[in-house]
Amino acid sequence: MTTELCRSCGSCGFPMRTPDDHAGGDPDAEYCSTCAEASGTLKPYDEVVQANADYLVREQGVDLHAARTMARALLASMPAWQGRR
Amino acid sequence: MTPQAATTQRALQRETTRRQLVAAGLRVVAKEGFAGASTAAIARATGKAHGTVFLHFRTRDALVAELVAEVGRAMSNRLAELEREAPTLANVLDAHLRALADHEVLYARVLCEATTLPAAARAQVFALQSGIASRLRRAYARARARGEVRDIGSVVLANIWISLTNHYLMNRDLFAPGASVISKCGSALKAQLLELIRP
Image (cartoon, rainbow over the protein chains, first blue to last red):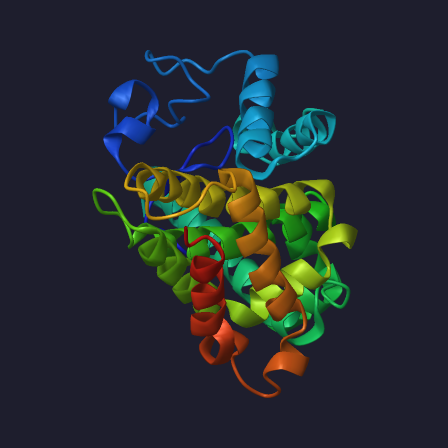
């Protein structure tokens, strides 16, 4: 089932399908427009955690504290933040 | 062979082995669940030495997170086939049901064991669910603007749909013994949700 239909953000795993999904609209950018600046530079860790937590709160109503914990766990499994807690 | 070609070949071999481990891991999970998916069982399923697993994944938790991510990517790619200017709620629900049907066995395993999975793997499940919820929210806003649905709030709508489908998947042996629960019940679930939000 190994999939390669689209690239995932190296920071949060978000599937990037359109140029707009990539930082700065650059299809070669390895991070998504949420996790990185338009220049392609990764945003600070705390900012990325908050953005990912906000996404879980906004879409599913997850408790903010639990969402932050979950976001940190998710990021720790991603190449950009490997092992970070 | 030049040193550069040898390096490329090693990288390709490494990637092939990693893919074999993930594919074998998914087969083991489909059959035994995550609880039965030990690194030793996965190594056996590929015919490789147990230690090979740890050359690619630092820990079992990292491997489990990757297995769940792989299921999520496959479902997410299936959902992406929906992409069009402004899908209706029915379009989004249909796309989600197709994605669930394609990966029913594995995703049901993920859901049944979600609370015992490593934190990163559980977070993958919620990230995937947020992707569905996000699509539902946008389609719901368009339907609201057209006066086609009543106001129950997009989070409530998404959570009703997610909990409904999850309930049927987690108990698929009761709702559709020996068959696909999504094939059997998916259309009815979609109709129930749309009826629920009719003005």
